[in-house]
Amino acid sequence: MNKNELIDRVTERTGLRKKDVSLVTAAVFGCIADALAQEEKVTIAGFGVMELRHRAARKGHLPIDQREVNIPAAKIPVFRPSKQLKEKVNA
Image 1: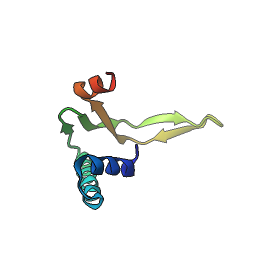
Image 2 (image 1 turned 60 degrees about the vertical axis):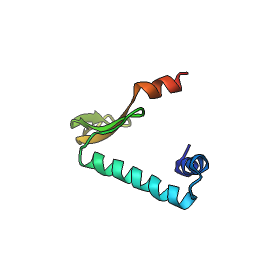
Image 3 (image 1 turned 120 degrees about the vertical axis):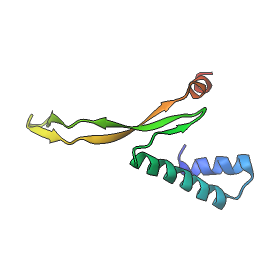
C-alpha cells in the first residue's frame, strides 16, 4: 500500500473528505519525521516503536577492484512492531 492508497482507505473508513485525510496524514508523517530527526523515540501503542540507531563509521571495499573506502557514520531509523501488531499479522 502506498500513501495514496492509505488515504483512500482512511477516507472510506471514516467518511471524512479525502482532502482532510490527506492533510492529517501529511501532518502525522511530518511529526514522526521531525521527532526522529530530533532523536526522539516515537511510540504508538498497539502499533510499534520508531527510533534511531547509530551506525559507526567503518571501512568497506568496492566489489570491482577491492579498493578500501571509508563509510561514514549514520543515523538509521528503525521500526519495532508491538506485540498486538505481530499477533494481528500472524493471525
